[in-house]
Length: 381
Picture 1 (tube, one colour):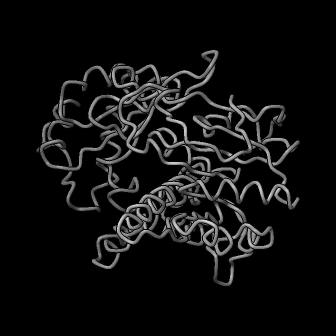
Picture 2 (picture 1 turned 180 degrees about the horizontal axis):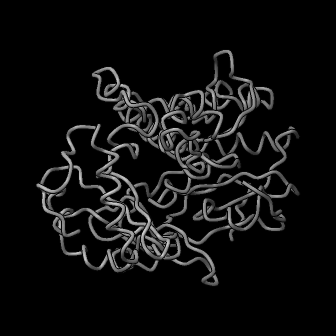
């Protein structure tokens, strides 16, 4: 852990602290007003690629959740500032003058009331990119309403599409809203604004909302529905477990395999691997045959264990993979070879490697940091 000086001093070279390949953001300085979920995730992505991220915490305030949340904080330098104190605000604005990016995840209007809103910060540093992360956006009828991932994806239309036929919507952890719909567009928007700054010389505000990002993820689904290719309701379409050749099946040991045999050549490889002739299975092009085809495929998969099927179909084009736990995934030979996962300190947990990769394989990233003297609290996400 490293605590920064409150003086806005010269930039450091992140590569000196973490020698690695693939640090295209080296030399970029980012101020992160500490938050949870999409903000630290976006900043983790920037830090992993070489940006110097300085996290600003509240002095004496417990960090949200427990040590398991620290993976999102890796690669940071940190300091604690009381932004309700004029002295803390002055210090932050001094740091703003030397920063390229500021990222905050407060409700709309909070940073303005603190005296660190976009107008004030851009007046101090016209080249600053000011990234804002909210659930609902900076305006609109729900802008000031509370919410969490499940609420945002529900109102965006995504949650209704997830799950089995005749069942309730399936909650996809907080992967879809917080991280895919929030953190990724935030990082992308910040980098787009930095690119534009190269020609204009000026920064700007990036308004990122989880609802907007989730709606963007639904683009293909909306187009399919408009073209009449998504008419089966939840769990009744090709990509949502409706089609028996794109689903998961229980095996003899109670574990599962995932089947993604969409194209004809892969489907024929699946049938061959299961010992089925094409002329003895129902025509998959007619959805009316899907229940019978599902029962036939299910009976075959139920005859052997997950790992037996994984081994039997491993060298085929059947597009069948075992459904692994996170711990199993981290130990899979493919992920070990690429460094997709790595063990956390002490070897008790798993965290992702650096993405994406540039040229040579990326390094291991920088260690998780914690503000000096800031306690942590355990809790549920």
